[in-house]
Amino acid sequence: MTDWDTLRTLADEGNEKALARLADLADERDDVEALSELLDEGCDRAGEHLTRRAAAAKDLVELQRISDAGYDEAGEVLNRLLD
Figure 1 (tube, helix red, strand yellow):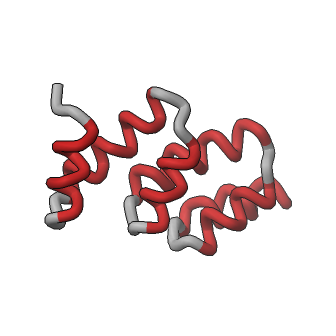
Figure 2 (cartoon, rainbow, N blue to C red):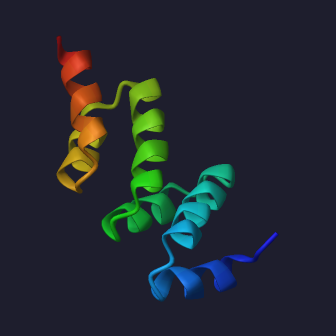
């Protein structure tokens, strides 16, 4: 298992797998703030985790925010919930 700092360094160098693994670790430890930051960096895996959480909570505002941050599937989930 690789530690957070090592993964962060790799992600900063452009390693997409490391960025996705950071999102998985943040999700495992319920660190929504870290997931949001990773989403802002363009991490789709963070978008997946945040969308799943927001959909389960039926948090429409959060789904809109996630969609606005660039994770299109959140917009699709939002539209389904609004139908």
